[in-house]
Length: 503
Ligand code: FE
Ligand code: CA
Image (cartoon, rainbow, N blue to C red; front, side, top):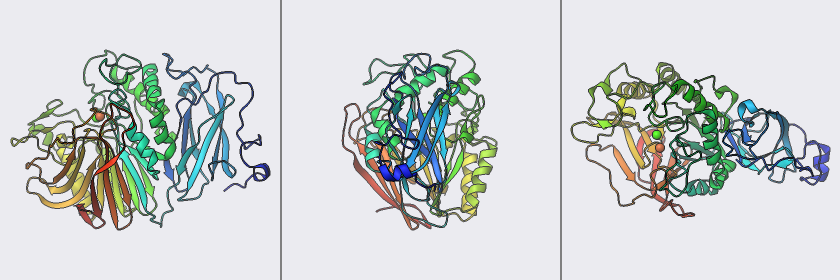
């Protein structure tokens, strides 16, 4: 770690304005620029990414947030304490209009497995303080509290689940996709999208992201812990597949639309420069190690997939089993299995979007074409790959379906032969609106699927080298604010013994 400055040691706190102390200036030329909050992500043993974006007028229709074309110097600090008496890293990042004055600092030189605090200063203002955590050192396996969620439609309800996630003070938060929704504003929901049209160009995607990031509950969750994010479809367009659009409205070049959506996504997420998009391509799948306890394999199941077989929807479709079809793309499939076979940690967590286990909708074999059931050969190769490598601690973490589910992963779903992993499906933050706790979608067609609940929320996990404790956390309503969260179901997954167990 860098030594503390003498000034900081003597004076402490922000009262002593100086090089390493962020103090407000007396004359603010423009309005407060930290309207979108702060975030951290991509924890490593020696650091993490810290993020913000300067946007004094976040909903300006040009998508530029009220900033001029000039570059802006953004000072940043990382400290071991919330009052910044012990600043251990600091620097200045140049925010540019080309990236919507977003700030992505890859902080290094920190100690493994501990808590830090960070903040920014720009244009005479100081940002809120965020909390981040470094990953533990390889060779160590301290307990990990990790929360994951997905599907946060702004109009469908209030982001109470995000607030409750912040209150859990976790080490890590995963968002598994549908972070924003691209649709036009509705007139019947509790909140209303900006802009009001279906978004399809860079300015529109930037305004939509800025609207979401302006939510105080979302800001609290970002400020509470580092995040690992992967997208699903709605960050671009519902049910798109690679460069194949879902529908022809709005008209225009889908390649350009995907490029705009990916760019805005990068600009608003605490991602590393390695994830910065080039035109319509963005390297989002990546591995993040959590000491020797766990490896997060964060997957991208949109950018490389074949088109949905037989079109979208739930149907009987033998083409879904075509061995040439892929959800991950060949390169990502190889990368995933190669990474899993390295056995980098006790647990392998696959952070991804769509329902992984087989789930028959009717006795004639109808299945969802957008999920892994539409790409069964790809799923079978992955399952056989990790099973034949002797991996016993694979847990697939899933979003997308706006319901809580929990399943045993089977080497053969039809014969129910052998449990080879576990799938935990988080419900949505808001998508689908208020749920129905009495709803029951469990079916004897899918004996490996053990749990279902139609309420909004997230999943809390506490993982050690011997077990993973799982709590499905839900709120009763999202169309009214501030509901409490409660555990609606708990499981334990034992290391070396795949599948769901009673706690
Ligand atoms: Fe969704
Ligand atoms: Ca989705």
